[in-house]
Image (cartoon, rainbow, N blue to C red):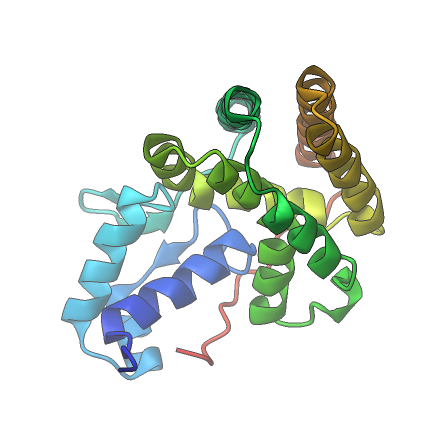
Length: 233
């Protein structure tokens, strides 16, 4: 039986993609009346969408000021990446203890990302698909640990983390270097060199956040687009 997504689920996914990919930049006001009219939906599903996105820290509902896209900041990036590093390194520690985990999903994610290209990301849907493909290795690593609480916590920060990951992925030719680093981590895991895998993973994450912070502090970087793609809801 095919499960059809509700209007709220589709609208939530649509606005989430636009925020993560920067088509709705930090501080942008989400006007309930205008969005409901543009999307051809009633206001109750949109209100539920705002509640869901607020829970994901993608929007803030300010009294008498309305709903706005949550801010991004250097401090927030540093903190979320610190948590990311802790969680992913914990996954490696768990894999070390088990030493019999199925690593094929990690290899499959690398193979899939070989075909990913930023130049092909011409729409919000393309950009989001590109992000999901490139981030797939890290989700596969967390899932491989088979620790339900680790998975839960990691996915609870996923939307906020994704906003910064997309900033990193917008850097030209990043997919090849990122794939090479993923391959090094996987090879260490496959050979049982878990300490080396963790050190390579730390270096990879720290290089990523350095690039993001550099981009955020570069005032010459072009601002994110402020027009949301209204198709695909």
